[in-house]
Image (cartoon, rainbow, N blue to C red; front, side):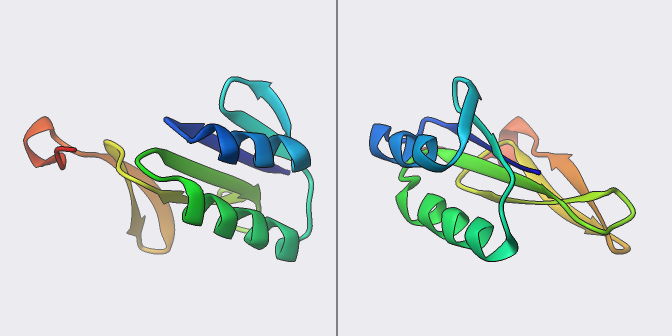
Length: 98
């Protein structure tokens, strides 16, 4: 299972994602793909996200049962905690301004 969520994404990127994935809600795309295809889709997102942000999550043989990655500025930041990936919220003072 693969899930990509985009915010403030260009229409062109949203259209490309809709070619490969099912948009179940505005900006939320799901599908089932091989690792190679998932990585190619994610490279497209990284290259095309512009001022927006995105997160990708996929099934993986980890303790959590999934992995995830992010691109773009967001108040949530992934952090590694002894090999377990968690999410840290940035304080308003430490957030980058756009």
